[in-house]
Length: 115
Length: 116
Image (cartoon, rainbow over all chains, first blue to last red):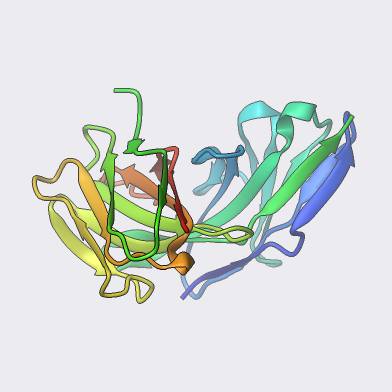
């Protein structure tokens, strides 16, 4: 079985400052990795995904993430945050389970951008 | 097609009442999932359909919960005899089975249930 750990439940950061949201995973098989964003009272929206190839993945809204297999991490970064980035961010891992890719989510990190 | 749609977006009910949520997935997606999300938690898997077949149910899905996808298109999630602990956001997601099945999910905006 796979699991995802997001150690930071809340991350406050000033506008235009850089941010890193941490994600560590565990799995006994090969996985795919995702970051989703959730704005208040809305569903989840895909930010970016790592399937294979280059370990640095770029997503929407200027976010990027780096897959590190040896450290089993997939941290999300943005060099300069904007007020509109205030949201909750979920890391997710998928692994094959009975013929389909079963998704496991972390508990989320709330990013609060301070003006 | 504009994406996954869920109805209603908000439901307030009294304890003991039955509620039903509907999900319309992206039309060409044959896989449909229900998740539950409570405050401070990530989405928790409830159940999964491939076409009309319900292939997996979580232990979170008690006997009071039932989900259907009768024609392999829309799905309903019914909660009978609601309890205050059922208060949560119920999220529906869909995906397309394929050679490059990565598990990427397309979510609806959720149905928020408040049980008084």
